[in-house]
Image (tube, rainbow, N blue to C red; front, top):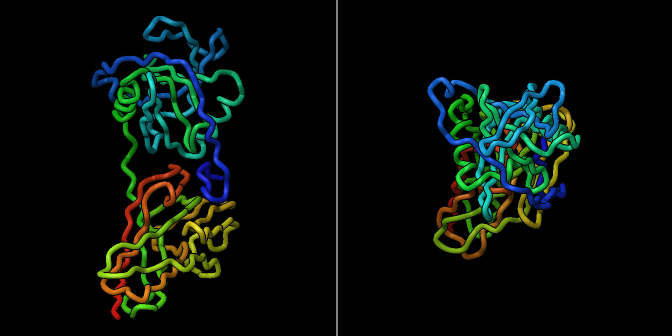
Length: 306
């Protein structure tokens, strides 16, 4: 199952790890190096079979596995995290690469990871699996996260088309006091494993549309996880709904239904209101290629008169 879970259904690990700073090689690549994919490998502090001898920029000897856990081409996204005297790099990895990294680090052989380009050691980092929903490469010196990011992006993966999320109203016009229901659809997405959405309301001349309920109609033939074993949840208090499949990923090239919201126009409501997806931690589409890839969203316009 995807490591990104429904945030209101599963407790996420959030214990911060404290690790020492490690060295990162300077960004001095050539055009030849630019064609190489960064390779992420386990390390050892002592000689071991299948491990090559390499040296960090500050002269320390380290043993690096000849077997690759994943490459820069596998990385769907990166985010630098700054704090104190060191930096971290948070990675979005496909499920296979994330599982391999987790197993290698938790096996206890070494908490470090080597980033290799060709035959050159680019960086040695510690791996933090506990401080967030994505693995973090931590202990980079100031500017290190940016340098590693540039090295990886020299061989950036093929651009993936953005998934589309559309909010479609069942009724586009009404009067104050009426209840309006919108359906949410996902399309242009492959290998979807999890989704979660929260909607917000903006606009209007006066009053507002107050959320009354959220729901997921799993009996609909166009439901995204129709025919699949899946866990669905609706958080009425905070206005979120979501689901995660337990039985393989699904494609949503054409619009697939994921859920509905109902809103009641307040007695003083009038004007045109926009109902749209609130982007952020409460709204995401997870796939086997990336835990939280970006998506484009289209809202719904509802006109209310008194």
